[in-house]
Image (cartoon, rainbow, N blue to C red; front, side):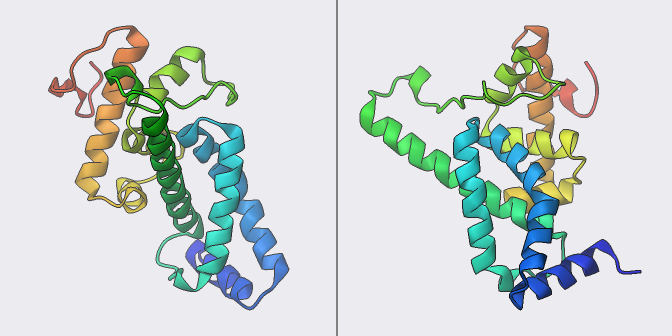
Amino acid sequence: MPTDLQSDRNLTERARRGEPAAWRAIYDSTCDRLFAFLCYQIGDRDEARDILQETYLQAFRKLDTFRGEAPLEVWLRAIALGRSIDWKRVMLRRLKRTVTLEESSARVEPDIQGVRFDSEGSALRRALAKLSHHQRAALLLREWEGRSFGEIANLLGCAESTARVHHARAREHMRAALRGTQRPLVDRQWEGQES
């Protein structure tokens, strides 16, 4: 029986040969999770849809770079993460050109009103929106999708220890925000312990 990695390699090889069914299988098996991930990262469903489309187009063009050392979805998620970071850079550049920057307007706050999941409330969405891009990605990939820190580090393009720090700081910020207290992140109780 082939492993998941072997199945991904076989699927991508079929897609390289131009089999539409292989592309459909790739899309069907990854689209929903990638879209949800992008909604959290971008905060706007329409923009997330556009970036999702760009992700698949880039994957189609660069399919020959997929080595099969990690699952296909991890490779696609790395592309999606890169596209979302590019989008945020463009938005920040536009904001800088049109608004006098003050401390409160220097951040692009995502509009996540349209993203709805049963388990989330408005306090959770507000707290997630206040996290840095890398912290939010690390938290969602670890807590929501159960990714390993190695996979998270791969997606964020950083060391595994840095991915752990992003995750830990995000958890501490979320705990403080959801309790209604904002404690500084220098408090080291966040290292894997409930405080």
